[in-house]
Image (cartoon, rainbow, N blue to C red; front, side, top):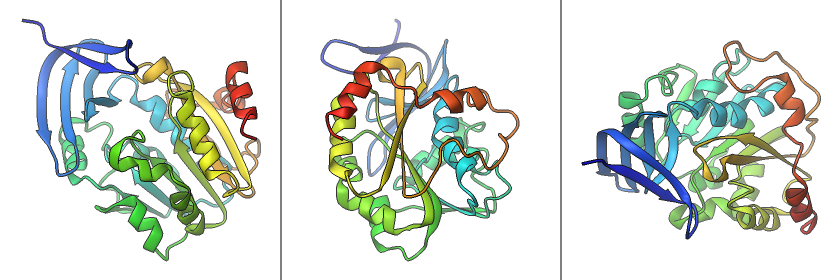
Length: 276
């Protein structure tokens, strides 16, 4: 009998995988975690039934949430990652010799341990001595921490259930307080095709917290709509002022992608103009 995985993106469409091998299914204190293997995308990690990572296309997301900010920041010594338990974002950040310390705040230790076991090429940097992992709530961390960071990357899940607080104004105000003077924040910002209202609501919610906001895009086949957005926030960044070279061995991000990633389709530009 064939086993299929299905994730609905709305009431009538989604993504389906034929499962080759089921590797893990369990529930942590925070969410259901499933790991299985499919023919076309390799091993897949899902949280509460939503695809987080596939071996075949994970590099796109992790490169795009990381390298634009790390390449334009004048001196990115300290980096904070909220979420990112699979280790992919940390892997990309730690490719920069300028980075002296990375703090990764992940609420679910099970995600980290399972990623180490099943996704070694993604989690390969989790033992880097520059990385400190804190197993706690990211919202509480930025509310209470006295540390300041140069770059902050919000590698968080969709705004459903407990994760909704990660999309509220208070959280972003605390994030701003935790950034240094030239600090840059990047958050994954959902699909402009399937979740446009979510993007608009986020921009409305945080309007005025940062003086600069820049939306940019990447093609990620296994995410809703195949098109994904990232939001860069700060007070004094120049997306065109490159400070350092691209690390070797990247598979998606390059100079041409950097120049073109902020080109938005007309429907998205019009939607954003409604809230500016």
